[in-house]
Image (cartoon, rainbow, N blue to C red):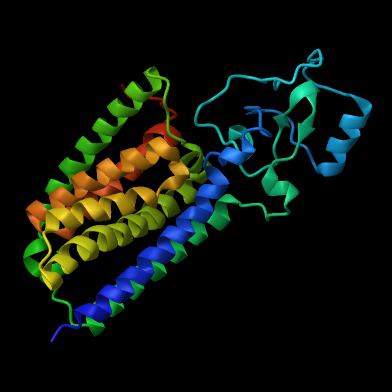
Amino acid sequence: MTAWTAFASVAGVVTVLLLLLSQTTSERFGRPRDDDHEHAASVTPAGPAVADESVVHERESSGESDVGDSGGSNEPDVVGPERPDALSDGVSPAGRAGSTDVRLSGGRERVGARELQGTPELTQSMLLVNVALSQGVFGAVLVLAAIAADVPRGALGVASTHLTPTFAFVGVALGVALYVADEVGASMADVAGFGRSEDLREFLAPESARGWVILLGSVLPVVAGFEELLFRGVLVGALSTAFGVSPWLLAVGSSVLFGLGHGAQGRLGIVVTTALGLVLAAAYVLTGSLVVVVVAHYLVNALEFVVHEGLGVDRLA
């Protein structure tokens, strides 16, 4: 007999832990909190980093400025083009793992809150290891819990009838279609003056052939496999089978959680990811196969990295 309540409890704990971990990443890569707006001005796209707080005080006392006298104005001096999706916690896109170069009124500079508070620097390797290990461990926990609770494979979309080449081909077609739709939507958002943060993707972009192999061959498959297992296989398929709840209702709820788990992409990114989750959830409900959505999810992520970071293409549309 399937221990549905115990399995659902484990899934709930995993979901909460994932969202908390996502929140930590969002604080490093997302927009500033509302109470930071009066302090932060703009981020210099490619300026020299401020080494420590003592440099700030020295420049303030001497009146030095790299941008000229503001004439006593209380308005911040904007240096360089301002991106709506730029890192507002002070990480420059050209040196994402480095310090900040935030200009205040009167030409003053200060280090971002992350450095002033002594938060350890987040490197690309650290984040990749964090993603691979955390989501890999979470995925293993779900698999072991499903085995221990005797959850039917069909409820998760991994029965033998779901693991056929046909479903893989459907996943490829869906993934390519979703990627193209995402590119068109992003271009329209740019034209309208909106944008989602791409700093996390840029930060994770490999700088060597080995890095690309690791990213495309291990990190992204783990991410796609775990997230689809949790947000589609468990929160839609298993819970629908266990408690008789409409899978379409569960699809909406799981997609909202899926979007919130991608807060590092900014508010627009959360909305877009929620919509993407709805499409993936619908595909899962209609096909019953986890393979379809895992393949599609992987392709969307992989194509974004390869096209934008690997080939250097800005927008396809």
